Length: 339
Image 1 (cartoon, rainbow, N blue to C red):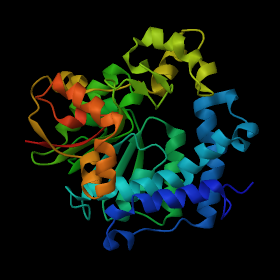
Image 2: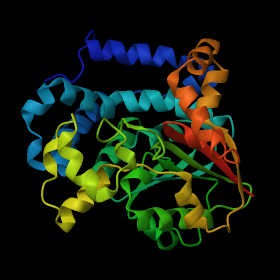
Image 3: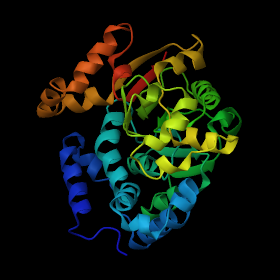
């Protein structure tokens, strides 16, 4: 089965998305984009279907899933869409604060490698660490498919950053769509360890992270108020989710099932940063992705300011006005500088 035919609806959506966010990408950045080799694409697709998705969903994933609209979308996202969005949104935003060429970047939770490839394309020396070995197999294949040798991947738990990277320092530590997949002890340990390997003046990035304070969970359950539920109630309520196979996986609350449930993704908020750093970390929020994007697109700015999301953000911010506005959006997308 060909993953994406040249004129498929999914391919058209991908091209549209690239044009939609293209305003933030300079010609210099585009010149560093690397094509994916045909052999590399075939290897990535095979690993996704035979290793990566089954490792997450087990028997719930079969050939019928990959023939479905949800399955096609999942493959498209991991094959192409995430990399395009990272190139056109994440990279211009990160580059507005950090000089990427030659930067030493640690990405925690590198998954299937889209963000790592996008950063390495711009000249960064990237190390990706992830507990999920099957995801790193895809990531390694992706880097080879794009002909990039300035990226390496390490299997490891973010709790062990101090041990894994003992004696190494980084210019940027990126938590890309990963904090929500950690247990609470893992989150605190990873944030503390990340702070320890950042020199003063360097940056920590949290991005694509569902905000626990937001009323709707569009990441895991696709249900309202789900982030606000205690874990035990959320576990039992997962069967009411419209998202398959999430809604059929969790019935018996044994330790393995509970851990798998938490790995699916629970919201994150600034409270955990406070707990992890316990008042010892001095930092400033120097940029957030939403503000960066809307400033460069007047139409997007006007649409956002008139939206319900903007009104909800203002309402939440009213109750903690000393916090940066980025802490009250649907997703946390912010760069903080260590002082």
